[in-house]
Structure formats: structure tokens, C-alpha cells
Image (tube, rainbow, N blue to C red; front, side, top):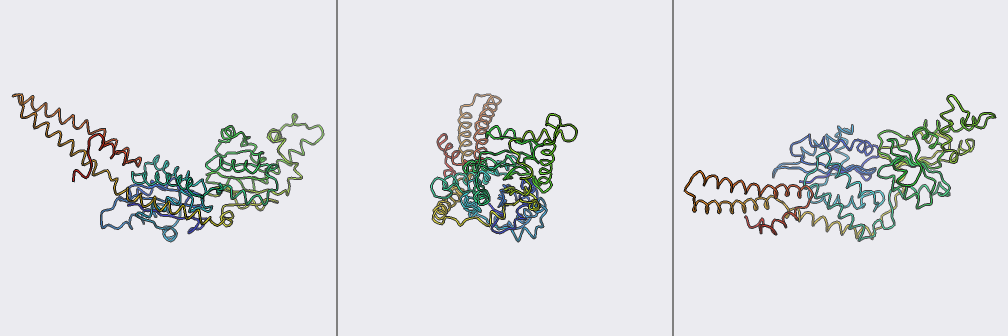
Length: 463
């Protein structure tokens, strides 16, 4: 039985989503440890969504409620949220409706910006993480693979996302009221993860060409080489942050990467270094003592750093796309700084394009119905039984024939029978292994069709 526990921007507070998202990577293994009937779990966590897709093995007539309550308790333990709060927050989807829900999520129909492109990749990566953690099952594999296929069909066959709208692009649209000329703006991108590439592409579409990147985890240089931009070192981060007109954060760090201390410290370093360098007889090459390091860093940003007097009080926009929050709210206490975070972006999300959404939902409903029908059809157990019965029938017929022709030596006859039984086992081994591999990949149909093509065996013939 498939069940989905869902919390999103539609039914959950931002703070709750933030706490759930921050501990998403540890949730699935915890869930499976809580109840014997919980066979598989895949967790989808984004900036506006936390969902746990569960595969329950329950006997007919048994209630799934105890297992679901234990799953909720496990999520709460991981995120530090009381189970009662989660029970009142989570939506509950079960049975055939789970496919329709995930297909809608993957296609972007449930996103803040309807049709956003990033969510499909996030759903795919959620399955990959579950594989690495060993928490997926054949049915969850099939569910998530069909979700990816359906999202591609929605993108290709409907108008959803046709304008290239996404959370990143919506953020930049809102930012454009504060940024007069993107081509003249100094932009610092903090993070090299899943949103960084999309953010950089969206910035370039708007004409931004002065972009630098910093990574708290040390990946900036590699990202910069791959995208033809400049990396910022750890030593230069505060100065770069203070000098930027726009800072965009999109990391998965579990701590704030931009705060008041960083910006004020960077501004102070800028002002002090400029003053020291401007002093008579104190050229950069002669700087010594504590100022030497600051001078060396400042030299890295000579063409980028504004005159400190102009920087003090200058308008600076910080865009926080991270989940959990990358930016401390105290940045707005710094003179001239404005913060645009996910809550603000969500409030300005446009209404969905009704015609395109209707077309997409029709396609998704059809795909969900097909998923349910195929699921019933593609249970491999009957086909496995049919193959074993077929091979066993051939084996017994050959043993009977061998006995009728006997060699006259009982020991020899026993060895012939043992050899035949061993051969049958060897022949069955590979199809059985492949059946499990195909099931894990959600490709049961290919195995069933191959069984019929090679052996002429069909499950219904064994009944």
C-alpha cells in the first residue's frame, strides 16, 4: 500500500517546513526502523515542501494507522517537531491517489510558481538518495520513475512552464524593481548546489555579467571554472559580500551564511583598507602587520570594490533562496540592506495559467489511472511462479524419461537425476536475479514480455 504524508506551502507554516527540510536526509531510515510493515520510504524535501512516500506491507483487513503514526513520530524525532503538531499539519494521501499527487508535484502543478522546472530534478534526486540509503522498494521505484516520465510529458505537451517561469526567475522579477540595470550590478552568488546553475542562467538572461561565486563548502573554484565566472575565496568572502549590489544565496547549509556581522565586518574592512592604502607612504606593497592580509584580499577585488564612503548606506539587496534559511533576518538592520526571502517570494507568486493547468491535470489523471491499472497487472509473483512451474514440469518429464531408460546402475541413475535438478536450478538462477533487478528499476513489463518471448510462459497459464 502506498501512502504519502505531505506538508507544503499550502498547509504548513514556513518555520515548520524549514525544520523538516533541514533534517530530511535522516528521515527515511528512521521511518523504516519504527514499524515492521514500513517497507520503503522516499522523502521529497524542497524549499516549499516536505513529503514522505511510504510503501506499507499490511495484511488484508489490517489498519495502516499505527504504522503511519510511527512514521510521523520518526519524522518528528528527526526534525525536533512534536508529533501532534505534525499530525495536524500533514495531509494524507493513500492508494491510487498517491500517484496522481506525486505526478502533479513533479510536473510543478503544486509549486508556488506553477510549472516551475526545478521540482522535477528534486523529485529525481529524492529517489537517488533513497537508493543510496537503501530505503526504496520496487513499487516506489516504479512510482517515481513514472512521475519523472509524466513530468516530461506535461512539459512537452502542455503550456505549463512555457514561459520558463520558476522560483528563481520569479525572485529575479521581484528583484528587478530594486535593480535598475542588471548589466551594471555586482552580483555575489553564494552556493554551488541545485539552484546555483539555474540562478546563474536566469541572471545572464537578465543581462547580469558581473557575477562572482562563493561556496561555504569550498566548491566555488570548480563551479566558477565550469561557468566562466570568478570564484571568491574564504578570506575574501566578507569583502565580496559587502561590495556586492545583490547577494543571492542558494545553499543547503544548516546555518546562516549571511548575517549582520558578515556585512558590517566586510564594510569595515573595506573602509579600513581603502584608508590605509590611501595614506601617504603606505602603498599596498609596503603593508605590514594585521593590515597586510586585508590589503592582499582587497587587491583581489580592486576593480570590484566600491569606494567605501559610497558603499556605506548604499542600497544592497539580499535574496535568500535557501532551505533552511541561508540569511539571518538581522541583515535588515544594516543600513541600506533589503532582504527578499522565500516567504516574500511566495506572497507574490502569480496565479496559475488556468488553461495550461487544466490540460496538464487531464494528462496527469490519465497517467495516474494507467499507473494503478499497470500496477495490478505487473505483479511479478504470478509470473515467477509460472516460470518455476514451467521449468519444474520440464525437469520432471526429463527425469521420468531418464528413469524409463535406466542404465541398470542405481548409483549412475541417481547421479543423472541430481545433475538434471542442478541444471534446472542453474537455469532458473539468472531469470530470478533479473526479475528482482527489473522490479527495483520499475521495469516489470520488460521482464514479463521477455519471459513469454523466450519460454512461451504467461502467468495466467499457470492458474
